[in-house]
Image (cartoon, rainbow, N blue to C red):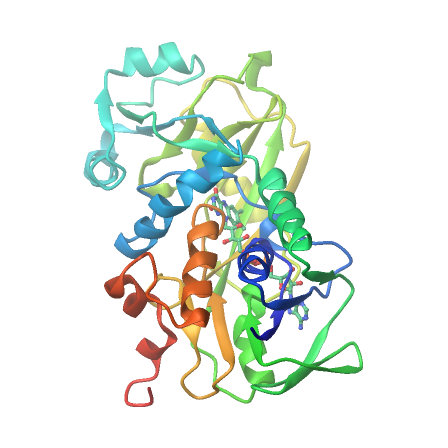
Length: 357
Ligand SMILES: Cc1cc2nc3c(=O)[nH]c(=O)nc-3n(C[C@H](O)[C@H](O)[C@H](O)COP(=O)(O)OP(=O)(O)OC[C@H]3O[C@@H](n4cnc5c(N)ncnc54)[C@H](O)[C@@H]3O)c2cc1C
């Protein structure tokens, strides 16, 4: 069994801590902020949609679903796609991509009565669920601690010596293995370990919370998605959240919503509904960090044995979390991954280090 240090206390880090501690490793997780899930993991839209993401991501989605179901963390929600008369091409592409069923606009309006005359096409997929992201994060924290993992907040990783240890808030600590679950800062962590980054790029995505439109009871409405992921909206704790669904590349940071981007996104949404946006109760933004090919990065760094990546979760970090951690634990145990060899290759960091494996 190994001494394993995990950098990052978002959903990736805590899920890995739970899986690796359950395997019997001596696990310590370090989170720089004073609370877990402060960055991307505290800002998600909390949707589980099995068909969202490329084929590799979908394999992780499918394998995570039973775990989240077992935690009672999934509640059926459904996604309804809406499009204008000039968006038929994008609409058809989304229907195929998300395995949706086209429905008459009148039926769409029965489900969500605020749809305006601009809606020319509609489709639905009732397979999508809400994720209780707090319950998932806390559930894995509890499981990790039950198996003896140490979880420290306010603990900044400052240096990494792969195979030997790391420096955390001024203290040197031994570790056989370091897991890089630092989200938007994952390439920065590679720098601390003396290896080049992989080109992981954080993209900002903003969100606005509005009062329930027109005072409707929105609790049973499906999520609404604008064609080409141009905006989305969904019920949230009795209110209504709307996202411009932007993907603006930014440096790793404590992200905030850009007023102009938010206003333009709210305009795109408002074109498809009858209720005007009169008040924004709150807004926020988070970073979705993608590898260049939009697949996860999980595996040992070929240039630094003992340094493992668990990064590039993009917009899928919750819906892939459990199987990503099980995949990592299989790699560390030197066992075949339950996700198979093709997926193992597709997420390995070796794909970005040709000739160096
Ligand atoms: C607006 C938005 C909507 C989303 N919607 C969904 C959705 O519907 N479904 C879904 O599955 N996913 C969704 N996502 C994606 C999901 O939230 C992320 O993929 C996931 O949270 C990433 O988790 P993480 O643990 O990798 O990163 P983070 O949660 O960002 O955690 C990384 C942590 O590493 C810490 N760290 C960095 N450097 C150091 C250091 N030197 N020392 C110690 N700690 C350090 C940071 O402080 C941070 O807390 C969404 C994301 C956003 C922003």
